[in-house]
Length: 212
Image (cartoon, rainbow, N blue to C red; front, side, top):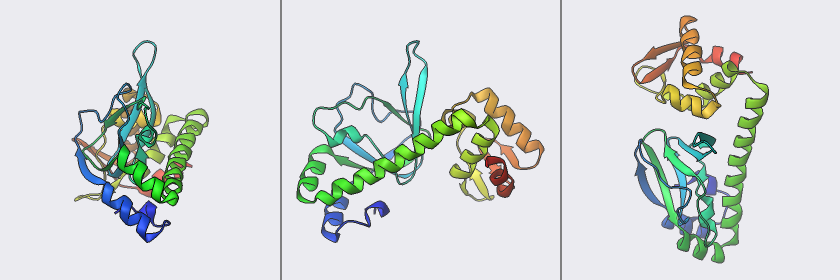
């Protein structure tokens, strides 16, 4: 059920997989708010969830975007903690959720489950660090090309991206207007085809070269 747990004992993995339950999160809502008590850990099977906070002038500050194979809501691993962030599904997402009490019970019996969850958190942290490094040293075009490669998936017409221009702007730390302009430029070069609520990637190799 959760490939990232393959390294732990069979018994521990079986216990963990029993306490994780499927949940569909719809775009347009929130999974948690900063002041909510953290009672649930989330694992992303499919989709993208944006974690953000509000700045001093109520502007949204995107901390990271969590994707397939990653966890969030890690404050639920501790008693009495709050989430500290808004969690917003960017698309309809397929998640697995585990209650804090169940996680504590399994972790106390099988310490290797704690290590497995820690490894998953470290991977997410490294992705967030990569994002910050890209924000500092890369222009919008290579940042966007890299993200398009990460989020594209096979569709009926080829390699498709179903995230909106605003979603992509959140991920790369830019504005919707800038992202729309860059996408239009890539479309003029026949790297992409822009359609209604979807982007078709025509030349993924070109995006690879741009992202470097």
